[in-house]
Length: 264
Image 1 (cartoon, helix red, strand yellow):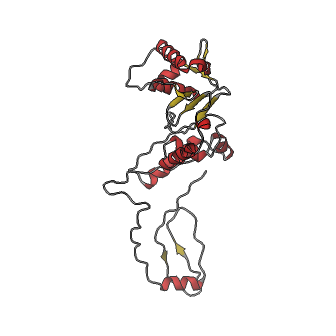
Image 2 (cartoon, rainbow, N blue to C red):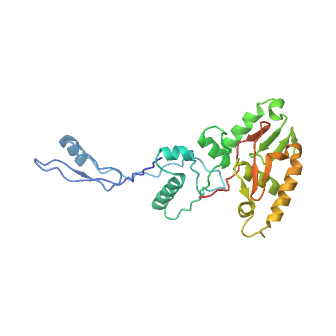
Image 3 (cartoon, rainbow, N blue to C red):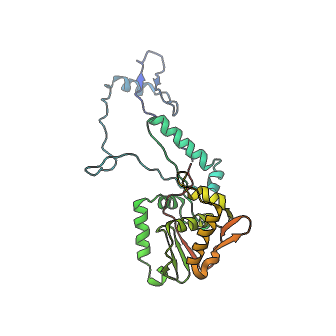
């Protein structure tokens, strides 16, 4: 993915002299301007200087009592597509940050990577919009879920609904606590990879909080499993290492619509 910005500046034209090709000089970093024909140069030099363009209207109306504080640009591209383009997600992020700093040095930036379970499918940009809670994307998702029949909404098995932060077991809520769901979500988004206890502590507890011991992690996992009832083996213990999420045929994962914990 490439992004180029061509700053627009006023061009100055030198008077046309006899037997001399006209020239146009413009201070721009986008591309050199090609020389104009003699007739075009005469028309341009004779024309009055254009008046300064008035400030354009806002792109979208800002409701009364509010003010615009920034914007979001959703970029949909996975790591394999970035590699095919000869780049990485990190390089794209850094390029956008550098461009923002050049255009508006006083601006602040924040970047988050949108994660989804492997094989979840769908358009990359839609995954990003859901992960970062774009209102229109969430509304579309809710409308789509509302058109399904009851059997489709509440099938037997496990539904890990990351968009609503809940887990359904055979159509009934599992009643996980916030931290239990965060633990399960962390494992689900890294499906098939064994996560050690130290990584769980660093990722799920803020630096300002009192960090739990590895024994406390085991207690959280045990409580999580008890609430998963007869589906508790989706969270497996890898002895001496940590824990891993294993998807079964009766496990369904709904698309993420919460900010990813992975930041750039």
